[in-house]
Image (tube, rainbow, N blue to C red):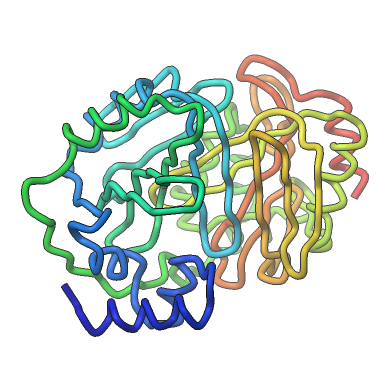
Length: 339
């Protein structure tokens, strides 16, 4: 254990009460994983790197809160794990409440964590990438099945604490040059998309990052809008009882909320959804660009709002509620294209 780091963290907590571990790690110049390891054996336990085994057991945990975040946005959803499947390095959870796309190759470290709170013990399973950045967390609630939590803890805890080797974070984006002579071909391929998931293949074919592609398709399939559009559009959805789908992710997990949003509040730079089963916290000041994006599918055009950070990383996507095989609602189409 890094005794000096543990002491620095304790001093910081005294100086700044209620400081979140992610913010503490930043102030101390380390990763969240490195802070957690200072508590090995004292409420923090390493997990075996057997993530498919873990995921298949999550339906036993009962009603939980799942949290997925990136640098600019936090997505929290309550519910139960249902319809869990694992295929190779990918996991799927497709319940009405908890809806996840999981990429196990980026789940490098896992921990079971118990934190003492005034209300009792806060239990969680927490997962991190090779940089020590959080990819996903699962928290117990007052309606969780604690016996199942204990059973899964016993099943997953490693006999020895894992060796931690934090890699230096590097940008996932590369500067790419688009061959302008292929622009007509690119736009034609875009117009012939059959499914929203085909968009990834389009990016790969033309060796483009997402934001570059939106720029090249501007005014045909995309439109750059003001960065306050998300807050305004979500307020209209709330007022009009328009059900939405909100995607927030990182390299390890994409987490989706489907349904209504109701209580919207702005607190400093944060724009928040504060509903009983769904919370969203967006740093509006970190949004660099916002785009309306139309993708053709066999079910008709599917429209989304996409928010990007300074480094080009996708922060969040907002869709109208729909399912494969269904056209998007006309009410959503009118709302999003009013901007």
